[in-house]
Image (cartoon, rainbow, N blue to C red; front, side):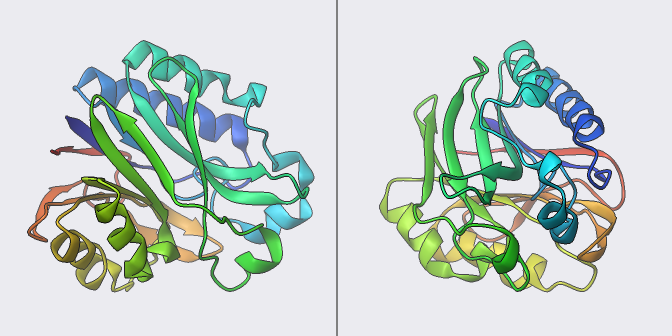
Length: 237
């Protein structure tokens, strides 16, 4: 199976523009054989917690009409996509949510970030359950950025039969996760780790991409490079 780690520079608060970019990346990755496409944390709005707190118009529903181009792209590409944004929960607050939209355009699962970081706690409702889905016989785990600092998530994923660990992230320049977190999760738990990061400016600061994947030995097997819209492809399983 081929998994794509996609990256771009989201437009702050512009869901329509970001949806267009996400849909284009899904179609392009699918044309190159990707069966799953992973997008960065808050790809639909940009990493802008203050804007999300103050602007209810950017809160999404699972069946939101604004996501129809993404659903259409998944159907056209024959690929599933992990798409992250502020999706409303039962208590009225948004979760920091990954929706996994399947190759048929339907939701395979939803994962709300469990380990919120800093100001995120004032904006988002924390998740309470691990994210899992199975496609073509391969079992996937979901994690979002700061989640990856907690090795127990990867431990539970491996124990639950997952072989691929998908991480939607926003990592600023100088973040040590590229060297100390993602390869360790892969190596310590025998997982393929596929991580999508943004580039450009956001409330997190300056980010530079370098989305990609690590094999179960902890070695890099894919790298999308710096500051370039596109994706890296990794063969997993």
